[in-house]
Amino acid sequence: MKVLITGGYGFIGSHVTERFYKEGYEIYIIDNLSTGDKDHVKIKHKFYELDVIDSKCQEVFSNVKFDVVIHLAAHIDAVASVEKPSFDATANILGLINMLELSSKYDVKKFILASSAAVYGSNEEIPLIEDTSLNPISPYGVSKLTGENYCKLWKNTYGLETVCLRFSNVYGPRQSVKGEGGVVAVFMNNLFLEKELCIYGTGEQTRDFIYVEDVVDAIYKSCDYSYSDVINVSVDTQYSLINLIDAIKNVHGDTDFRHEQLRKGDILHSRLSNKRAKKELNWTPLYTLNKGIFKTYKWYEEYFKEKNLAKDKNHYNKEHENLEKDEKKKRTYSKDSCHILKIY
Ligand SMILES: NC(=O)c1ccc[n+]([C@@H]2O[C@H](COP(=O)([O-])OP(=O)(O)OC[C@H]3O[C@@H](n4cnc5c(N)ncnc54)[C@H](O)[C@@H]3O)[C@@H](O)[C@H]2O)c1
Image (tube, rainbow, N blue to C red):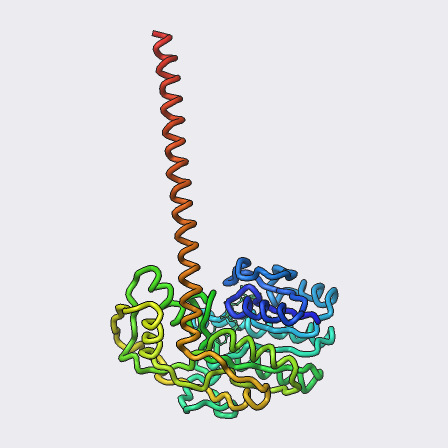
């Protein structure tokens, strides 16, 4: 079985590659490396450095017959999408259309779209169920909702089996500090850079934090089901930022943090029902916040240890280089002095 993972070098994508590889799939990645990192993927795979809107993607689809396409490549920064809505729409809508066209043309059996809780926008119903009203408040949310509609259209018009998974706030190893659900990544980075953690407001605001391996499991399970619609992928739990800080303290020990005023427009509470995912995908999230944060923390600990070692090595090499240069200068100088001495 062959799987194409667009955005495979990104945070979620890299975990998806590992799981599908373990399950025996041949792994193919399309990524433009805008936020992704080649070092994220160590397993055997084939890589095409392409943008998902690129017409050259056709060659990839015509050469390899994919069974499954997992479309994760996207512009993921909701705040930046407000500043550059057309850039966001180009990647998230036109890029998706290109992948849908090619998937139906080349008989892909299952197309999975990474959608987002951002489609619910200002709807603060608790819990949010898939059929509730959708009021995205950012171009990013609109582009994800539009993507879901395109997937439905492709299913109805061309018979392509599509499923759209609305992820809540995903966290875990390799997440960048930018984009969606980044608070865990920001906290981890600040911890290891010995910067203070900052909570906006009282810290009682809640998010439905889900560990990346649970998300990957839902993606994997959705390949085998004929269900073709939208599904929330969440823990269906409201974790407050205070809960998050406590989970971090459990592994790191006491941690300083300061409060700042709540930011305008921040949604206070968010929780997505996962009843449909449990029923349709026969899936259930396995990670508690404590367990997920423990694994995430250990990864960042290792990552910063290696980074600091590399920095020290670099620093050592630089110092060594400078010493060598000084030595060289001295040698040149003494040679010159010799020369000078000879002349006079
Ligand atoms: N992280 C979350 O909490 C979260 C929540 C909801 C939905 N999502 C969705 O999940 C998907 C993956 O998110 P992530 O957090 O792993 O992001 P990420 O930025 O780590 O990964 C995105 C990957 O896609 C690549 N990419 C971006 N634009 C591309 C383009 N036009 N062509 C080819 N490659 C491109 C990037 O280089 C990167 O490797 C996205 O679609 C995002 O909208 C993420």
